[in-house]
Length: 150
Image (cartoon, rainbow, N blue to C red):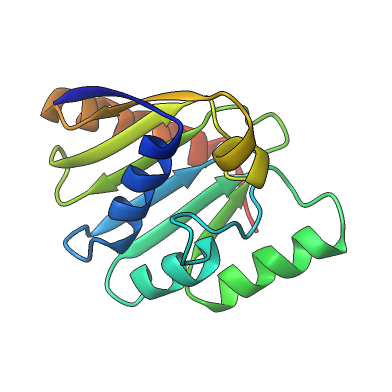
């Protein structure tokens, strides 16, 4: 599957991924993250912390810019999310894996912020091709290796 997502479709698919307990590993890569409502009902933080009870959840973002962002990341960390930071990060990706090459990925332009999900004109690709999932997994591991644990 290869689909172009825009507008509400991005929110819907992100919500589907973040509520699917069949995934063993979830990687969220976004330079800027706030505790937005993903699907209009559930906050990003609560969705991630629920997933962390049954999956390995990794967040790769930029270092916090202020105390609000620090508290947000600390809360996620306390909720079981592994957090890595890199001040050069610009990539935006959600990678959800059932195995090394089985899963779903959203690759696009939107940050996980109110503007990125509800205001700006953004575009993304949804993909489940095994070779692409495997390759994205390699890239996420490379980005994590270039980052520091928070």
